[in-house]
Length: 298
Image 1 (cartoon, one colour):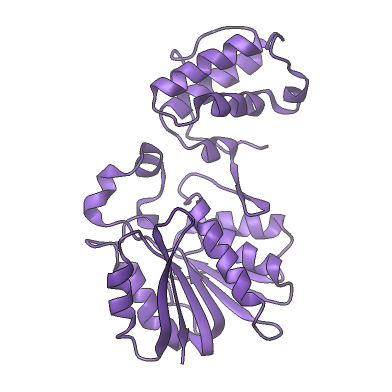
Image 2 (tube, helix red, strand yellow):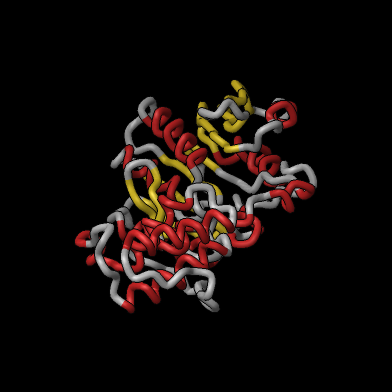
């Protein structure tokens, strides 16, 4: 596990200075619980693994922790208590059955997007040889990687307007050996995408402006605003994506878009007014929340 956390700085007075694993983790868990972290003990253990590096496998509950590891641990726990996302401290996160690098300024993939990826993979099974797929707003590249890994004959274009996201996506594409299959391209949605595709997938910003202050601190303070804010009603990017879908899909091509809970009716109303977009529907995620729009181009 490799940390990519240049945002970790500052005081570490919040964390007890115990020297044995058991006490050190207990003190860190107490600090994290007091800061509102949902799974404080589990995360305290993960942060100790990160601080100790390869030596963590040899540490037992009663073992003494080296001073250098304790110092690193205090810095990490203090950062997590400030609600820096765990994924940013670890420098990576799991997505489906693989890991992706994440870094500050790049949206961290969520479990809901794993469900979106699974739906995309299911569609891939019905597509012809050498299918073409477009991942709009790729971020870390997780969706594009999932598509490419599922169909080794697929060609995927992954676009984003953010230089940080593009750099992160390219790192992940290289790390997974998919440079010949996934093209990472700078584009503001469709602006530099002249091709047509069998499949378009997107996890656009869909948080309504009034809801932004209510997001968890990890999201509100450390995720890129442009990856969250969907305008006054949260639908600005979704409308743009749906409006251009049939200009970028091949006949009978599919589109899958992640949306916010409660947006289904408005999204369907808009989609049904888009020429050529048919078989439109909204489905729920595993938690029973409206989450996925799908449609086809006639």
